[in-house]
Image (cartoon, rainbow, N blue to C red; front, top):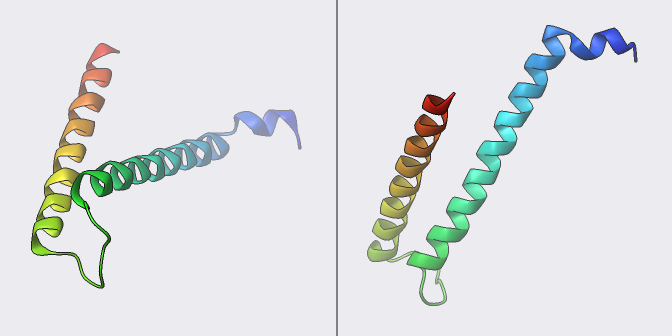
Length: 78
């Protein structure tokens, strides 16, 4: 590979997209682990209970809200 192509805008854009995909994937993994451990207290059956469903939705929303707050604080520091 030509060393000058390593700095091409297309490659930089691709790498940035891949980095963002990895961050989203990591966030979803953490969200799933945290909320599952918090909301699913017994062995899950064929369906989640309404309490478990509500807990998962609330947990996910709080997690996303906090992630947005943290990202905004990091952006304001630059």
